[in-house]
Length: 238
Image (tube, rainbow, N blue to C red; front, top):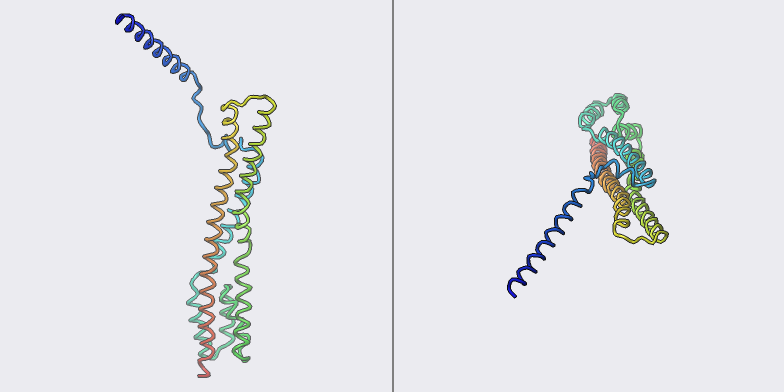
């Protein structure tokens, strides 16, 4: 009885070993495929085209606005010193020429204020404020487009994924093949559009807020310099 039981155990062990060996051989025969990033982008389908266009558009606008705003935010303390010296010496024409040659938002604001000298302070403040609004609107030009890119790029990604899932289940309904290989093989490719859309959306979102923070700093600086200029104009009358 004991020998019979031992023989059964031995046979079972041999069968398990044979099964494991066959499984390992079958796995060894599977092709060692690498997942290439470029291939995934191509397999993403037509939705990758608008996502790519949005990415390029967002980057172009970001770098163009970034350098423009950074140029506008340069230190203008020397300009204020020169304008102050010209005003204190009574040389108004020199102060206007200095502001005109500066070719900067602050210079244009101060130039408008200098051209209004002789009128009430409220009129000068209003003129400077209006020019300031125009300068800020120039700095904010096209920044809203980056915000739009941040919003619609993920939507395009989800659209591509949903369209791919619909196609997968449509093919399953036609072939009556619901194997996991068929489903997962098509689904992982379609998920690429969602990943690409989210990636572009996140980058655009960050770029959008970076530019807005830069514009806010420029606005604060312009307001500070404008207040200093108004105080300068009021000094002689004190």
